[in-house]
Image (cartoon, rainbow, N blue to C red; front, side, top):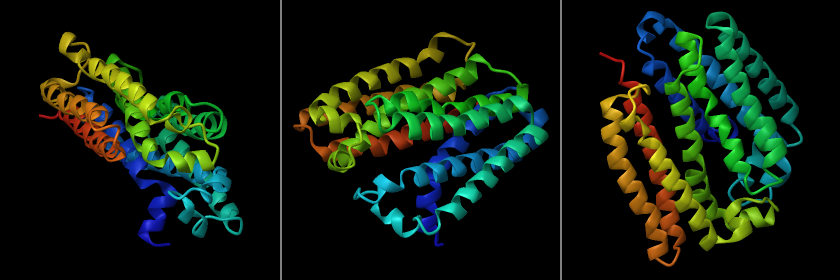
Length: 287
């Protein structure tokens, strides 16, 4: 399997995000240096669980992926002839992730990693994705668990900081994914998937993207008003700057007669938005 196919099946871009969320929460804990050796098992177990979840997602969605332009190439990699081997690989990776995090870190971290897997595979993929337009909203909780796991790896508890990071990822997800979904409306309609833009149209979807973005921006600035959330000055400065750019880009589609190209810009920028905010959080406790 070449690198491109590997990335498609295991959704490496999602795994990178999962790891970055966990790392941000890990380093935001002021006591991270005393348990820096936990970072390796955290990343290994988080990566294995994320890749396993992606694999099960692709296996479950084999029937619809083959009929969608964006995902049709997956049938050449994953199909009825080999999915059992991939299924077994997914089981082994999940088991490894649970064992590594449980025995080398602590049970609470292991619990959050397993809940991240379960919320993506069972809640989002199997229950929500084909049933409701709120699939990506509710299912977005899967991206929040890595923040709880990252903090728990150090302090073995949950904090306002880890909950804040978890909420940031949760609120970021709809703006990010709906902006992408606008580009694939026909695909989702052909597959009978109730993704929001495919069900209510691009114009109405803009209203939801805009509303969610306002909620995200307001939420992202909460650390301005409380020191109980330990994200640091780098985060605050960057959040103000990046929030302004995000709001500008989200408004452009309305000013350009809802151009799909402009929604695509929002999608691409949102990747950098979250990535840079998480990186800035990672520096809060590093001296």
